[in-house]
Length: 493
Image 1 (cartoon, rainbow, N blue to C red):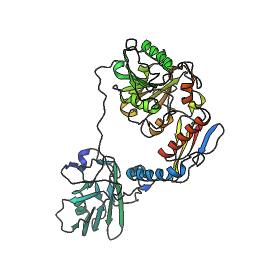
Image 2: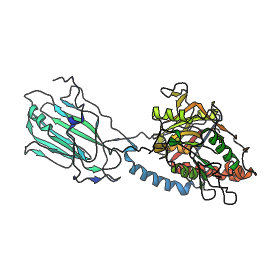
Image 3: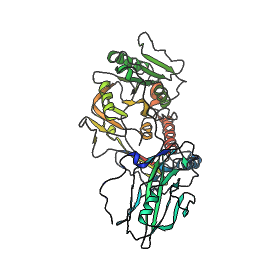
């Protein structure tokens, strides 16, 4: 057996990649035959009851329309799995044989749909031995530059049918080129299978190939490094103009030139136009009456024209510890998408420490568990100050191009927060830092800054009696449906 000690294919040039934009490709569709991937584990999952935790399974008692919406949910989830096939199937476990006669690149191939390349495969055996081989894939085809009549090309396969020496086999392999046959805007994983046959043994290797369109960068235009060109402050308001006025005064004090976007869904009879003479940097967007919490958030964020935005509620106040420049510096240095700060205090409340999501998958649905981790993951370079989390409070700096792309589902009208962060799982890098604080004017129940009659706001934000039951039923219906949930366990707020 020959021993090769140096690594191979350090440069893209070694792959002999070629582009062919005139090649006819097929679109990858849910009906397309599947790759050699293994099905993700989907055993049972649970939301175990725990003291001082809110735990519930979705049944007819919690989802009143269960019999009506479950068939629709199951149908939609089936379509979702089909359209997002590679999200639900793991990469195959590839076992390399000991004392193999085949040398090959076992991983690292990535090309675009219009590219093709020569996979590195070499045979190392006895000189007098004779070989045949075949090479195949699911989503690709092969050509050979060898002038042999004994090479056959069945669908997605190339077969060498005559016996050749080690030297001739390697010469043929140097001219075998792989071509993708399918196009998809999302990544596809193909698997090349190479089978080598001799008089003494048969060997098979598998080589994964990732076919991916490489996205372009999205850089937010700006014409200077001035903080006001980098950050926009966004908020939403309803029935709390007194709160909003205090917030705007505090922003004017600490960041007088920074753009502030206000989404306002107050009813027409109470709607007030913000005085642009007093607050010249404020942009107020009037919405239909009581359009909802996440609808307002979505509108405000959609109007951001800076690389970053800072989300705050309308009952907060900026102070000397609301250090937006430092928050942005951390985001710039680490590449993180959201940097959260303290709401009213540098010390987080107990429920805020439940900042990690564990959402295992089962055939009957996902099990949402919000947990308090036994250890914190320090953000490198900011140990002791910043920690990696899955969810943070309603004061954070966010990267517009990434965090702004996570949809705020407008079906959540009266209460919503966790939903955005759940949708961000696997998409956004999030950290909490205990060195930044925004003042918080109100605690949970009747706010000191609510306009005139407190009942207008509190009856919607914190309903009682039947209204409270109806709200919780609505949230249960939405959670059950949109994230295909089986149960949940959350912190008590």
